[in-house]
Image (cartoon, rainbow, N blue to C red; front, top):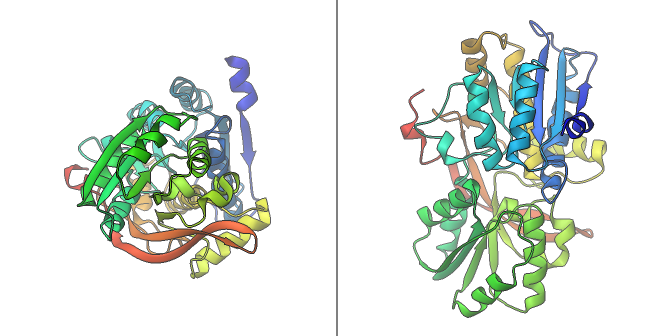
Length: 378
């Protein structure tokens, strides 16, 4: 295990110029860089590091380690980063079960956690914390948007997600807005790669639409098998099921799928155009929503650190909450529970100039918050 941790560690100091900080800032990034979820973690790391590079400040250090999508390893890494590496802020976890294993302990030790993706309901309501911020969304949000979209003509939906906190939040979110009938509500194993039984259920269900939340390798496997099955029921999902990190692997089977997201590559604002150009120049590929969320998380941390010392938790937290950044998403602000209020859009998977990607269709929600903020008392 010690060898694994040592091999996974990457310390990066970036930039030589930029706004001076009151003191050096050390960030610990724990994310998934191996296994079926590696694409999500790689985009998270790359989006985050792009913003750090653009900040151009020599006082920022980022220590990155691979959690291999294992909660017990994530906990070990977090403890090491806090106790040995002496990080000021933690970030980067993709999966909600890993975040639930790490974030409560981190904030209990007085460390800020700024989430780039995972956003379980359990941390958004009564158990919110003044040191915990989410730069992405609350888990239910994009699924709520697809529930609202499905009301436009879908009478009987088959809904499916992995059996872990984000999967449960996803179907809860979908059902919160969908007014039609459910043909079935199915939970699969996390990391599952064979969906023959579930596709057979879909075929026999009488559903006129299918909603799936299957991020990373799970979504790749499902969509390929679904295309081969010959089942013709329309498939939709949140942006994670059809994000840029998985579309090249899914291929043409994804074309036409509808999804929801807070950003797409065709967003017509200056911050989005800059982010897109910078990311493609740096990494020679299109970014996913995971990269955008991580980019904004880094921007938030840098902006706060330019105004307040992280050692002064009240002042640093107040600066984080101002969300004084130019987000590629456009409008962005924090709700009372330190989760985003933002617009959410319907997207469609298309092929443009030989590249499979998402295009914006319409806005589903404007200034959308979450259902749990009312219970947060910070």
